[in-house]
Image (cartoon, rainbow, N blue to C red; front, side):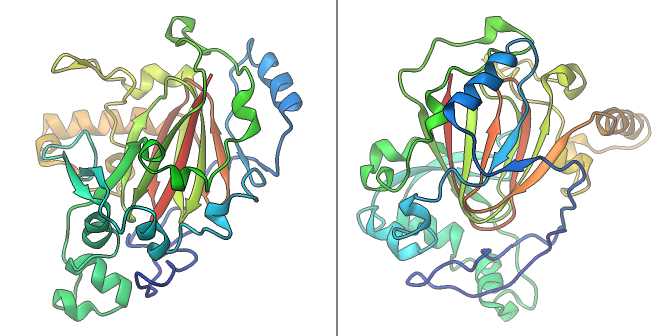
Length: 327
């Protein structure tokens, strides 16, 4: 079980290992994912060839990133290093503001990387400052609630090639993985090169339950993340969304995992009495009957999320991840 921790840091130091957790929740794993050190390209390809007839399964690799500079001599756990490679923090980056992109009030804005670090990662805002320093007097004895900012699914490395040099594309991203296990029509044209995205934010950031259009290797560089996965065969029970304002949202579940598990408050719009409560409890019972696997992804670990698998991701601390999409 993982609970909250308190430590201090500074721009010139490193985030604690593990970085400070800013959530009061504890996550107890129920259906552990298997962990292995690594898998050769040939072995991975052999298993993926077999998975053309069966659904490929998620797995955690613990030994794919041991030579990454981001984890060794160019540590992304040092705020000063990140600032020095973003033009002193002056590089503009897109930031999501809000608990989840499905929530009312969620939005996006362009900010300087340094401002993002100060405002959301270890800011002067009372919530994070109190937890980073242990000085709750900054918030009148209790940390005040502040918006969550997330640099999510951003192609940061095309902007900052200096940081790209700190990672290495895993060899298995050059295999030919299995097709979509339920609907081959969802398979997309082959990528010439793996598509890299950065995910950087404080504890408490959420990516709602969704599927990716490609196989995904999610590498945890800094901090910890809770990840829950559901097999493609359970898609109907996860209530995929339809079109929202003309946008196809069928890759996203209408089920709010945090609300169903009691980690987050039920939105006011979803609250109510009598009939509405009865419907909510029915949906909750249906959702809780769906089997899943889960894990807490640690620094240096890599999670393979096969195409078609539903996954919900929640940062338990300051967190920096890199995802590799490939097919």
